Image: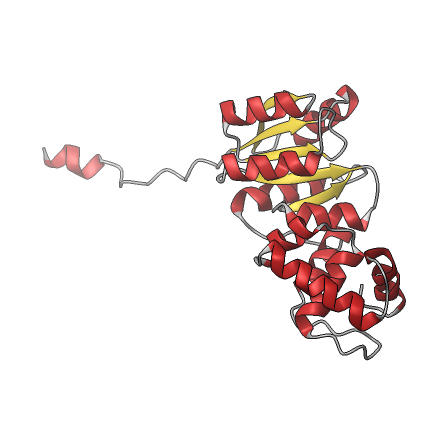
Length: 228
């Protein structure tokens, strides 16, 4: 017995198994889906489904409950941002990363409004794609310089102040920034966590204080004044 004990190897715990991130790719273009699959080969990210339109995206997301949905903002079959909002409500454990071919700040602002973890340009590198998906799955903020990061930081600034003194409150200045990025009242409400009626009241006060007649003129004022 002693001989057996003396030759026994000391217990050595096994290293933890790498965590796999499940991903649903939603894009109507086969070339893009194949490209994403190739870029993720050999990583810890596993593609569990590929959708080609809004309907199949919602169906496959509910079926697989992936860690992340990689969603093209030009997905056929409906507004991608409305789809993203529906996914966030029905699958709170699933994170969203949007993709777009256009470097459009309004897209970035709308992506943030629906709770997306990131909004990537389609010329993204393999390293950036992997990082965005892994960060989204882990609940971490978007990393690295990007239009999405800049827009998110701009909209998150509670004490935003216009360059010109128009007598706006900090909250009105923040709402003005959202208006300048093209967000609707409902999207501003979601982003700031205030009611739609409160947003409408802020917008009316902004138009009155800036002496402009509509949101477009207010947005032009915001851009010229350095608010965004």
